[in-house]
Image (cartoon, rainbow, N blue to C red):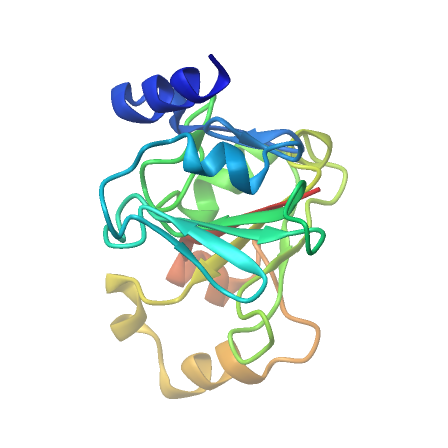
Length: 187
């Protein structure tokens, strides 16, 4: 029954909701590798690596990468996606602009420079509304937006080298208005 529910959620799109701290689609911390077999995906769509599995492996616009918490693969440690299909109930996901995040947050957002590891990672929601809501959900931003070409040479350099990263209210961040590139749910 559990496997049938997973298949239904994935096939009809109802499973694309990200619930920070809890799930991405039907996948949650207690999902096991055996549960993934129950998805009954087409050949090649479920692939295993040394410490993880990829769902929708051959379809990047649906792909989810699962990292297992233990060798028996009975608990998920994290789920990563760069797909635009997966969004929070309020619509935040890959492609959401920093300006929209800051507006919804109601406070400055801090993010790492684009030369850091991981590049463009949101490091603080400040005292904003999204701080609690997004607990356990890491968003990374990309500078690859049409606005990048409008930046000066020094502004482009600062994106990779500025110590301490950026604030959503900084001039270069407002000018670039980066977008969410990926989401990682960590348990």
